[in-house]
Amino acid sequence: MSRWTLASVTASALALTLSACSGGTLGGPSANNQTGAGGDSGAAGPIKIGQELPDIGGLGSSGTGLVGLLSGSHTARVWYAGENKQRVALLDQLGEQDVFRNGRELWQWNSDTRTATHTTLPAGANLTSPAQLPTLNPSQAAQQALALIDPSTNVRTDRNAVVAGRSAYVLVLTPKDGRSRVGSVRISVDGKTMVPLGVQVYPRGSQRTAIDISFTRFSDAIPSDDNFTWTPPAGVTVKQGDTDSPAPKGPIHPGLRLTGTPDYTTIGTGWTTVAKLTGVPSLAALGASNGASNGNPTSKPAGALLGALPAVHGSWGSGRLFQSSLLTALFTSDGRVFVGAVDPQLLYQAAAVK
Image (cartoon, rainbow, N blue to C red):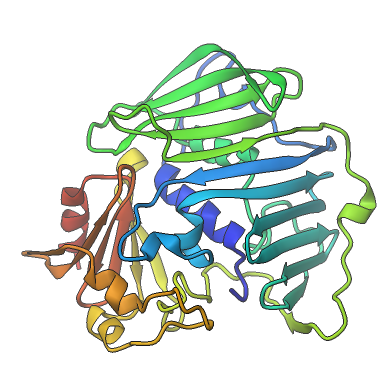
């Protein structure tokens, strides 16, 4: 992937699950006030990423791209030394993908493709700028979950836990709207630093996590500067990146590529928000594409993968429906995609609005 690392895409998928409700806080010692993410403090450690996606004709077996990262277990490492120094490394069987932020210098590195992207950030760029910087760690995931605290959410504390060898207390967020497929979100907060050590998302009616992003070891010491500097190896292709790349330019799956710049909007609010993406290939165009790309012989063509999904139709049109215990996605014949942690009926209602 060129401008977005897999870590960025994972964060986007998580945001689709936990996104879009703004405003509203708890009175008194609120959950928002009980979690922290740094300031001048440090944080470092390995993170386990467990996410659930059923295998649909090989869809869940790809090691690269969004679908590969949304299935199975993955490992990442993070280093944090303030708003201007961060590093994230995503590890898989094929190699490693890194993002280094050191002041205004941003490097992205893919060891599998041996490509690097360098971006000089504008003066005063903060932690969340630019969009390429991944928000994969539990602290960022927890902040997205806490944004959902409003009248549509029940909040309680659970018994204390031990995460990454550290004592933590647990906040539990539960949607009141039964149309959401999210059953609960559990945030484990370090008792010493107030930094979230883990976030788990449970589907409605299930005791098994669909998303689990947790530190396996954690240090609150400030990492040394050599963790944030990087020099491209000899012979590596270096591209110059933009300071604002809000959409992924690489493939979600090796055989599924976006056409131009997709248009992303949301429909609804809170836990039942549906994300709408236009500017993607139509089902007919995908069906005409036969070859898997990137030289991966195990990667099936996108048309074949989507063709394995159940066909659905209604007053909104026709398409293919993907379902897991947590997420649903509707791929319409006219090139629209609707995704949410909701039941299919809400996707159909969103698709009916053109």
